[in-house]
Length: 280
Ligand code: AMP
Image 1 (cartoon, rainbow, N blue to C red):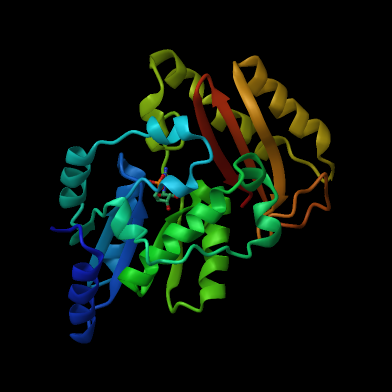
Image 2 (image 1 turned 90 degrees about the horizontal axis):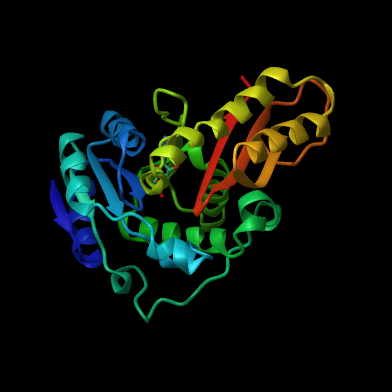
């Protein structure tokens, strides 16, 4: 695996490789890598001649400075995992490489998506996500971009960003990789103590209950039930919502036909966890 810290050096290397007919698959991450991230590397490797991963804890997407400061950093293990996963290139930029002073700050038109769920509870978060992904796509110019369904709303935001910027990249969404008990793998799980880790699976149980018990008609009682379940299990809940899987329109009533996604975000003490389940 080749390590690049310089955006311009990476850009010219990749341009050279592309001119020789290689396609580039890109997996953006914030590090503290786990099997969920590595599954994206495997997908990229399957489809592309060159697989690039980035590790950059993007300050502009953290609305809470304490969350940014406590974000886990495990770079040595990350390098080992990427190498073992067969990643070809790791882009490990400094903040100045990603955000040089010459780069104008853009505002992205994300519309409805920015007003609900993560957008509502983390103001500015998706502007920061759009900013960093736009910049990384501009440097790497991948043919394919690999994202995890774990961040459902983020996937929709990035698809919208790709549409708006007109960048020629195919977006692939990979299913959420879970621990054996069902907890979605997440870098933030590293911040859970033993007791919290055991409790954390309740978030998956709440979503599974909604998925199992959902019926056409009024959805509010079921959402309240899931909210109560999490509260009783020591979570401080931001939201439990049911939405149209294609548009993320929040729904209080279901016709029994529209494809749905159930989403939740909740704190276990200091650690904020998110998860979702799609109705198949
Ligand atoms: P992050 O490092 O949390 O910014 O995540 C980097 C990428 O990995 C994003 O596209 C995430 O959606 C994806 N990802 C994170 N956790 C998982 C998981 N458990 N399964 C699949 N993809 C994931």
